[in-house]
Image (cartoon, rainbow, N blue to C red; front, side, top):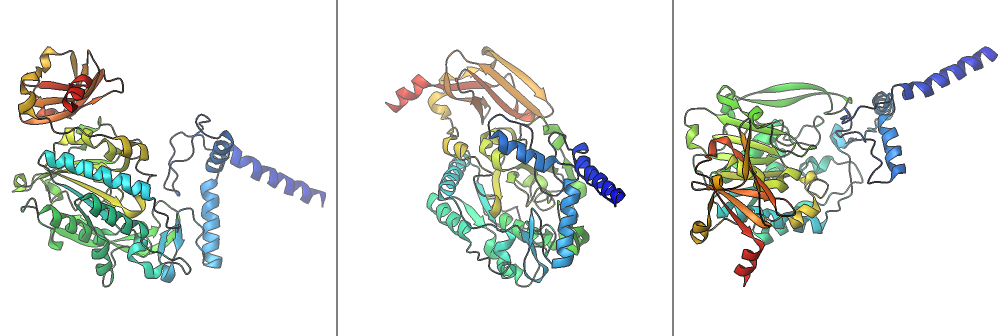
Length: 456
């Protein structure tokens, strides 16, 4: 009996010590099962007790294996999905974890007001802006939601009302995909539970392209014959080790051989560290030069599905949306697009993805009236400036003698916006090297005094 006790204590000690020995101290570590970055050790700026508890819970050794084992046991024995990301619905459907519908009217107001500001910025420069709101799986397949969960589509309806109020040029894929879902599987039953599948993406993208064609008739919806269509077998849920057995639709663009990937030339571009997907693709198919160049701000619905838009445009420059979209003018400067598209998923259209403070305080430059101020332009070469070049990007930096409110770089008939620091004394402008002509460049700054005089 004594030996058994010693053995038991030994096993218990090993079980307690091993997770500490294999504690995960790696920085910037992405969890393979949570679809998020694990907590970092950072006592500053938050409750220390909360941070320590979260850090230990996230980093303890064998955490992933323990969660996997617990999840599989509940699934096999009780038919329950105990998972940090997913939950079961009816008839084997898998959804993201359910949460109570509680859309924030303050966010919706700020977001739609900012969309209108972006739209005005684009239209002043002769560029159409299109916003597309894409529905969640729970919106399209409500009949398969878990018993007891009542979904009322509150966010979408609130968004539609405010988008109309602000006059935003938008479309929604909610009603189209609901109709398609009656006869076709536009979201998978299990795999990639939060996003549409390749068939749903095909229909949703064509709806966007139909809207683009109102401004550019050469842009046409994609045809099924333009793709190789098959299936891919998936044996686990996305960003998870939860076992499934499902064949899902897969689309491959037949024009892929004519697509040139230029993304590496733009790697020096600033991107939010949490949302850093970037695709810079050029279409060399015969006749593509007649198509517009599109700047698309997109999320997870498109970041792994570039095959749909890449052949619909001459250039398809796609930036991960959310916080990057709040630096809209920075990307517009660089790509000088013919049209701008913003796509957001229903579940990611909230203050967790778009900063309230920036939405409220961001001010985009109005287009400069070159006729009114033309005689006040200064040659760039007469200013105190530096030019740095990295890949396809050129950054012009200036030191100013007095505080400025806003500034412009003018090259030919193109205007580029300077970003100015809080003190108003240093500014910079980043643009594509193909648009930069140093000897022809001119600058113009609005100073505080000038703005006050104009107001009078």
